[in-house]
Image 1: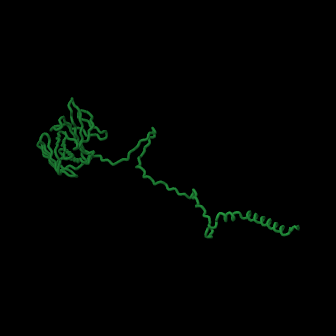
Image 2: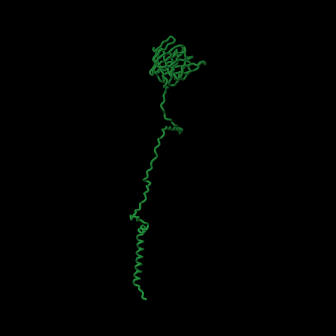
Image 3: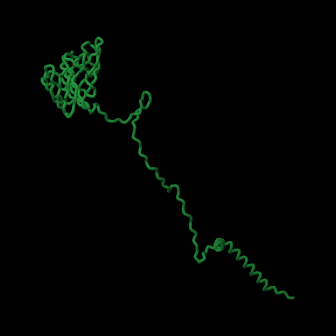
Length: 261
């Protein structure tokens, strides 16, 4: 039988060439073929474009809000003592009054200058002291509606009117009649008192300090007598006074919040 080689050889050569070309195409465009196989083309025929993932904000672009500011506590002053290194907490200072605002004090001389007089009012009550050095009289009583009504244990009387500026009135007793006009005063003017013992007996000394700095004072053994011994003025530098027998005392300012003798 005669063998026909031409057509078969030609066919075999064509198939071999086609295989080589197919392998070259696959190696050259792998991504296109994979995309087609995975369905990169939608059912409607429109190409689907891959969406990039959202960018992660960089650390430098992140804003951190600071916490709200807390109001600071009131400042407390701190003082350090150099010698010891100890720390002392100093409380904030607050304004204080040097005298009781409910107390009203008056001091002056009776008309004619025969004696000094001091009056102090507190909470509807009043005390008064009249002193001429060799005599003294204490008064106690009431203060109401701008009027004073006071008396001594020996029957002398003091009546007056008063307001924020001063007191004006009349003293009657032991054959004396004095009128007075005394201005309102504040410390160091006013009444002062000290106690001492003389031969086992308690004695009292009292001073009236006037606005001009002048003083009148006396010592007695009963608190309300017609006779008394003059005392030396208070030395405000030392805060002391010397009684007639040489004793040194420390007078204390008194007012209507403390009852008189």
